[in-house]
Length: 120
Image (cartoon, rainbow, N blue to C red):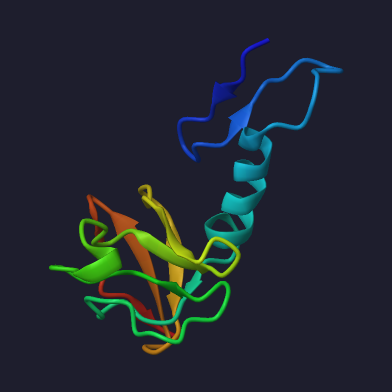
């Protein structure tokens, strides 16, 4: 049976009982849940380029006019994957909420942008 894609999260599902093998789609689901799907917290959202010296799992929201590895990923979720030695990007969906660490605010994604946030 071909897997389906959940329209809200992008997570693949629907394999039949006993479907053969663990495939890359299953790994991608777990990676997404660990990096962006549960308790999303980002270090900063006003940088236009990676800060350098990233540790595995460091997470940011690239600001407008992003450059270097973040170019074209403004307002996405950027997660440093040390194993891959690269940034992974997730496109937020309406209703996602992120804790912005350097601002100590909660921000929601709506209408293609992050809100200014609520201080906590």
